[in-house]
Image 1: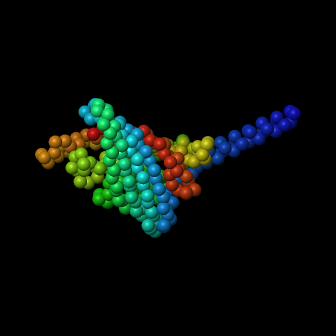
Image 2: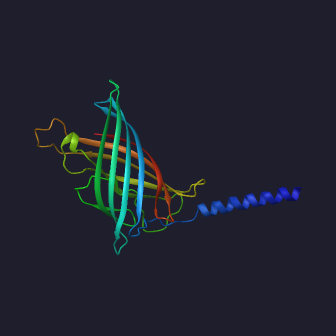
Image 3: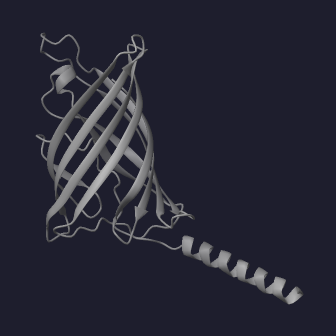
Length: 240
């Protein structure tokens, strides 16, 4: 009996040591594109909207994305042809009235192996761009790095701004190692935003953005074999 217990203990120690060793190995992250690949993304945003510091309504926004990699450049950039279908169901705070809104966006862009976007101003989606960005080297668990990115918002309806309203940021990344349950790689992304705008010379506008600020705290679960995001979760706040 003692020998069996001892054997089990040794196996458990070995398994634990093996996992710790595996979880401490350096990894090189990069997006992997293949011409003809197709993918779909489904995301849900649960948010409260405030106007002049008073809660206006609660919204549940569902984004459905269908995309195809139409080509891959010699340097490994994937050309994405995407349709973004956005639906919003909102409930007013004071009246309880419900309203729905839907819009489709077409978007074509290049994305490099390290995650950088090349996209024209005629396209409003995706909103968050250049996240994640990976260094061109192997990374150890616990290691941090920073990279620039930006958010691009569609303010045509509320403010009459005909191009994507871009707010830059510097994101801090932390590679947190392998997730014990899924085996996926966990990457933490945090950033804050702050941007002041010059006065708008269009006196027909009642309102226009003067200052924009906010933050995002995101955890990405990365599939390194496929070279893509498996899923992620995010908390964010934006003030305009």
